[in-house]
Length: 536
Image (cartoon, rainbow, N blue to C red; front, side, top):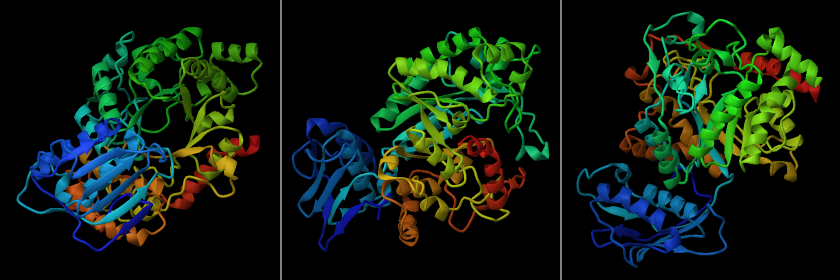
């Protein structure tokens, strides 16, 4: 029926309720935003104005339900959505839309049809408060209108966090008015790899783009209207070659750098000088003005330390501070910005490499390197957002077929994503409370267009949404419901991957990938996390 599947649903025999030109739509004041959204999306598809009124569809504010919970009752006499707060009412409205014909997801009328709702009683609430998706707009820029479309797609699947990866070696995508060269120079690169970097092929075509501050305000507001929080990421001290290209004094070398044109982890990091610390604080000043989210991600992942170990200033810092390892130097550096965020009432979020040198106080951890690292972070007393790259990174190939476009990594199948559970085995009840939730990730090194983004995201993102909302216990039942859900995706114009493999135009024979086995990926994971196992 719906995706994600409601946690408690009873369907009874009966005629249900039919929407007609006479149907009204009313709401208590605290739930008016959800009712207005429902009218906004249903009126063009059905041709019904759904004017305000006490009959037909009613949103009633009640007590005793969690903020994101709702009750939905459909009888022959009408529809009642009950919620204690606007987010719950919005998710009730999303479920109501899915109960209609898939044509309810179109932007205009396509002909006469009945608009019938089945007789149901639903009581529903999410498993986790953080149900997110990371979209990497740094490697391949996603134009504003395409990003707004993805916010609607997240909301349609009851996902409530958009983690926006705005900066990396290959591009800086956020206007910072104090430092205009970040986008003038750092906002574009001269070329990009064709397929996997191991083949050494490049397209010779410049790639770029960035969001103005007015764009960001629009994106954040649009998302908030759909109960999606935009969490910005300014990655540091690694993944910063685009920033160093714009302002060479931020780096550790004397010669200037171009914006990165290759994928993979680069050697270049920010230096640890006072002026660079001040630069980052200036950037964060503007970030906080633009993004009201409680969480702000400061990266901390995959920062190579070689340049620090050869830099006179960095080595002097370590000596002055009596730091034993470059990982401890990274923690010292990053703590300037986590402390800054805490002072400003925000919660820092950093990738799990921060555990190697000690996570700064008050910082939540984004755990991407598996259950072992999630457990370590939780038991070290940190809140955790879980995003394991072997189960939720949607840039990984979807099958063993050679037809998969730009196949990289091991296979992350639809079944794998649907069966994902953020909580590792062995955690106590108190420890489980540290798991805020989970997010899928769309890293875009090998996703160079919105069409390919659709293919890599769906239907796996729908499976992920069910895993974090109600739990992916029954995959066969999910695939049955997916057949109907695919019609909704078609109505929305989503170019998803068919269950039997890519369509001819979804293949990319021009862009060879680098498929790997799960055993190879697991071995790499063990090597990456060896420093943590040794420390703990």
